[in-house]
Length: 251
Image (cartoon, rainbow, N blue to C red; front, side, top):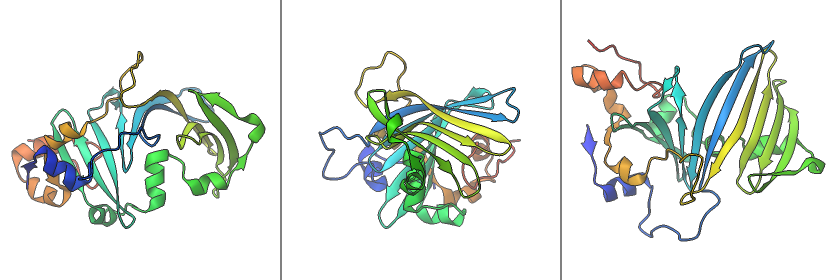
């Protein structure tokens, strides 16, 4: 069922705020980081570039790509950590002011993992377990964005070469390079911001909790019933990349 929730009810339901309020102390868990992913097939004659934001708060992280298929992207994914090793997800459609909400059981039904390791992949890109398996080079420590950066290298079980520049204070990478047999992937931090911090570069396109509360929300389990409604089919056709949704054709 489609619904438009009040600010307080929706925030409490999703766990984006608690009844105890918000801590006044700044938290290094809360950070906005813009990355650029570069891909190239061997031999590297033409690179593909993708820019995206990771906007993290305690217990949640929003991932927003700036472009899709060469056009400005108008959607993002909001991952929320839940008790008992569970997660929830919301696919946000900003131009339509809509959200598709997924519970932990929905994600599992779609074959998506929701364990702690998966949460670390979403919120810090590299898991703690992955990092301890690599070789640390203490002599190569440097500073980036005002933070100490540690250098790790190694090889994954499938033979992929890995090179990571890691910021332990933020639990985020400054750079990652994956060397696959037929292509390379590099992820490079370009902008680092904190909430309330003035920036002369650009402002993170973070979706505030008040904005989310006024989006029209629909449960993933209700999508099947909506695919026979012409009006719903139109906006569902714009839900590019929403988990478990086959793109309908609007007539």
